[in-house]
Image 1 (tube, one colour):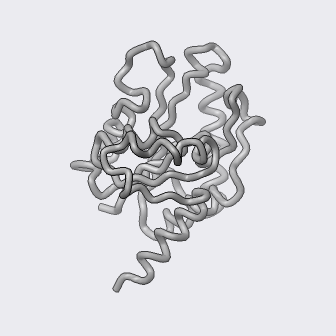
Image 2 (cartoon, one colour):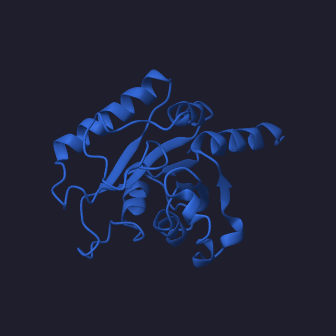
Image 3 (spheres, helix red, strand yellow):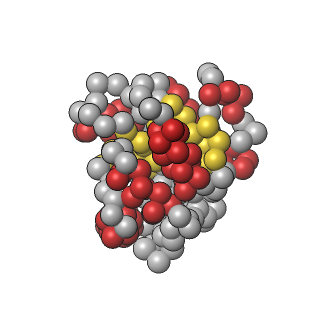
Length: 188
């Protein structure tokens, strides 16, 4: 089974907004992110997305709009030659006490179970917020922070993790992908 890379969505794959991404038109990929997903997929990685979408609980958009955003994302990735195996999303707000909203591990556990992985110890969690990395940390993922989205602020909060020195920090998803693929190219 191929190694799994779990990506946060807003701030990692697409531009984020403090006002939420509420429509297909507002869903704008970060330069290089779509191509990075395709490159990782073509190198043999399985790609999944784990995204908190509390805009649904806040009634800023509905599930049909979210599905349309994800359709746009998957279509762009497919056109670039890649594939997203699964998207797990949480519709709840921060006060709903659900098990799925990151930093809780529910979305990552759902991805693990849906895609048939025994555990996530050889998987990556790539995010721009501390809660992304905390969710990955809780299920044993290797952790990567991108400085896009909220990542610059988050880079100063890594001490909250169990192994902050092991977090790979990259400027963007494109840089993370290039580093990971270069590392594997150099490994005999």
